[in-house]
Length: 126
Image (cartoon, rainbow, N blue to C red):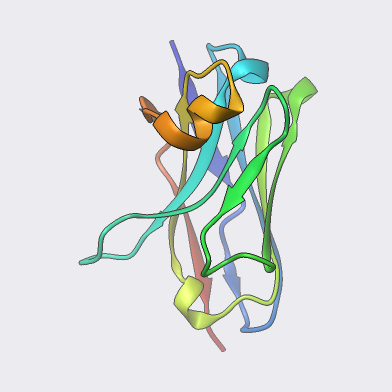
């Protein structure tokens, strides 16, 4: 069975940094499209970033570009989101998701997120 498990969420002060993790199992991690999403109660889910694990190509939401970095540790089936210069508006439940794709173009244009983790809470507040 495919499983995604997030961890690392915490309370952090504005301007601070945090790294959150998503460990995947039950699928070929090295040939997947992986994404980070966030959601605040009462608002629509927002995509934060995505990466094609087969080549390392990435894409970021404008709201986090230049502050967040999505990366992989293939050997550990782990997806990482490094978040720097955090703002109160970054407060949300962060979840990872997977789409089975064989190319960056498919990941970029036709990702179908079929598996989701439970999420980890990130709170940015003084």
